[in-house]
Structures are given as C-alpha cells and as structure tokens.
Image (tube, rainbow, N blue to C red; front, top):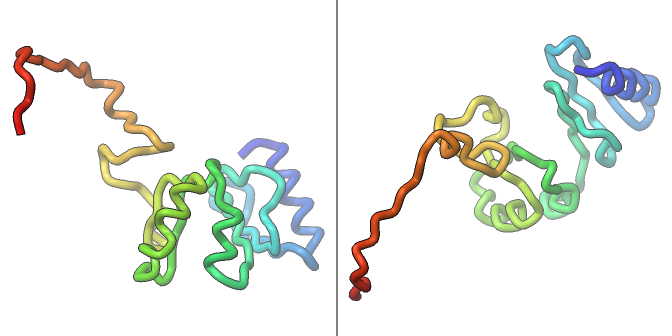
Length: 130
C-alpha cells in the first residue's frame, strides 16, 4: 500500500463521527464504513462499505471502478445483475466469496489468457445455410 493511501486512511480514523475503520495498513486489510464512498480509490486489500437504505440505492455508487460486488441475499441477484453490469461492475459473487476466481474467467473486464492464444479462422468460401 502506498504512503498516500496510508495517510488517507489514517485521516479517516480521526474522523470517527463520519467513518469507522478496522484493520491495518500493513497489507493485512482495512475496512472502512461510511455514509458515502471515500474520495480515493480503495486499493491494496482496502474495502469501503457504504451504508445504504436499500439495494436500489446502492446501484448509484457503482462505477467502472467497481470490479467485484459481493451480494446478499444472492437469490435477489437476478433483479440487480443487469443494472450492476450497466453501471460498470465486472464480477458479482456471493458476499464473502470475492477471493480468487476460476482460471480462464475474465479479469478487469477482459480475458487475460486470450493474449497467449493466436486465433485463426479458416473459411471455405461457402455461405452458411439455415
């Protein structure tokens, strides 16, 4: 975690009326609870938990910077999946299961393993029939 992010988190600790902070900036992980998203990008095992009245309200905080959304109750996910994707979410998982994904799955909205493959198409010139 870089020095600037550590300083921003230390500042939030002092603002305990607006923010609650758990954990340490030593790489083991930090959780920030706030009423609105922090104004910096939480990286390096840092998560910002924003309190909302409803799941519908939470959608307004999703951007293309929202890589993974842990969702609960997961049975309600079909009602929110398309809106989360349209807002920029790249991955939706059960709450608490945002760890490693399956090999070959997209990461950061791309398929990184495809960069190691040379794709080739062989067309025989005949039109497809239905």
